[in-house]
Length: 217
Image 1 (cartoon, one colour):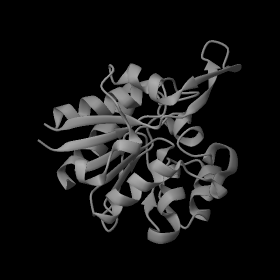
Image 2: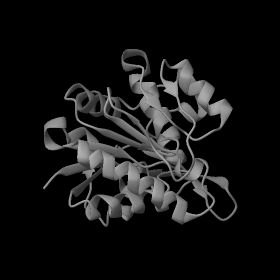
Image 3: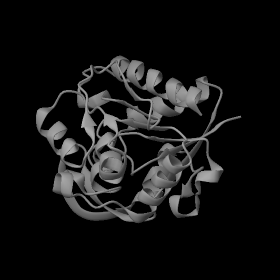
Image 4: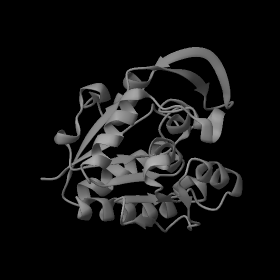
């Protein structure tokens, strides 16, 4: 059975992984006959009240929060190597741009969590596929933009697309229920909630993205 790494960034779209996107990705992996291996960095995040959409001033652990989505079956990303996996998938949510990297604050000048960058480069170097959902393609651009110039999509937002292209990556517009494949770099991306208004659109795009990733693996 193919093993697909799923990199989570917390639990909740404002300060972690977008829950719908993460669950849709996990479901699509299972439907494709593969096994999801959930992981997250063992770092801190700034807690957001999802009722008021305001920061609370409290801190939470990215790994512990991500374990909520993974039902406790999760690894510290520092312990995972490319040889353990056949592919890697990144759900979106602001956590991908705040906790896995700081693209949400610095745009193209973003720095990336060292273990996230390491594993992504290992997977890419081994020519294993990568799936990126919602804002997560910006993370991939921050890691691989200069060295690989991948073609990615975050939907149609011109400001975010411009920052993605400043990294050296190429942006391609895409509808919420579609996906973009960079065959040369073996990277698949889909906009999800960067554009979608309904969870059904999110699942359609993620289903196609994950299916393509699993088939490439």
